[in-house]
Amino acid sequence: MAEKLLGQKADEVMGKFYDDVISLEDEDGNSVAFEERPLTKTLSSSTTTTTTTTNLYLVNKNKIKFPVAITASPVILDKKIIGAVGVFRDITKEKEMDNAKTEFVSLASHQLRTPLTTISWYTEMILKGDVGKVIPSQKKYLEEIYAGNHRMIELVNTLLDVSRIETGTFMIAPELTNAVKLAQSAVDELKPQIDQKKITLTAVFGADIPLMQTDPKLLHMIVQNILSNAIEYTPEKGKVELSLVLDNEKKAVLLKVADTGCGIPKNQQDKIFTKLFRADNVREKDTDGTGLGLYIVKSIVENFGGEVWFESEENKGTTFYVSLPLSGMKEKKGTKSLI
Image 1 (tube, rainbow, N blue to C red):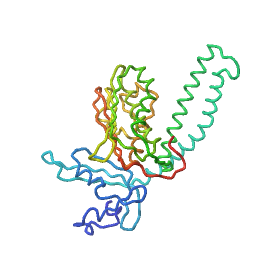
Image 2: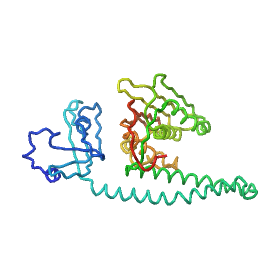
Image 3: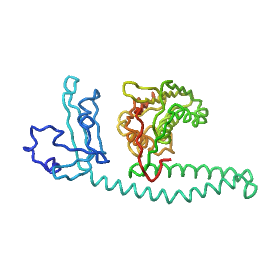
Image 4: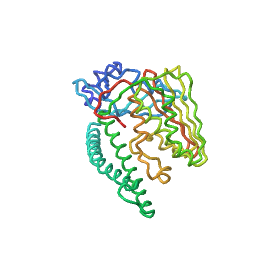
């Protein structure tokens, strides 16, 4: 199968450098640097986990390009990584099916948003008394309609964000941004939920963080999604810590959000950034979740050229880390903003 996909015979490639045989490109058609390849990362990593990458394309000897899923696993001897095994497979059919689903979700969401917005407007007018006095018994039900409709609008907007990310139609509009002020605004927005659950929130901001050339809306989405998850899954009177500091070694800004919440089961941690995935231990506690927030965060961070990872232990809490390069975001033309 490797011979068929690569368009080369085994005896033609034996003895050659792997980088000269396997030609990889990213979704924009750029050649993947040697140090960024899954196998290279596995060999140079200190961790012993297997990683799977699905956003790369292989170009074979006949210049035929197709999407591949690559799994890189370390070979360990005496607790040391002495090699790695790479497995790749053609995922053209999966990509085609996923694209069809994305287009359907986008179309359906666009069609849903207009009537939902109309319902919201008219309900708000009635609640304000613009079309006559509302008696208390009616107001209670109208408020439930308004709140339920608002949740639907949020879901539709989230689905639209996902479809824009996956079709590459979202735009990035960088501008000089104060990351500290932006993070503080995200904290302020979530204060009602923090106060309601009597959560102790500690925020630490580095005084030496410079202005960054980035899209403030996208940066806000990163902070808001991770912080709101921490608050959502931390029990009453729990603790949440947020810090934004300069990482001079990586020439990046490091966002850290730690909580004392329910944590992520170890056997499901590799799926946490997967679209629509929700861990078993939170399904019953939070019935309104979509499983899209962290998927969106990872997609934005990767477009940012940054990294996102976490540490978690079930029933003891989770800590998320986001490393954002000081070089900032590059402008990207698109049809829509994510917000």
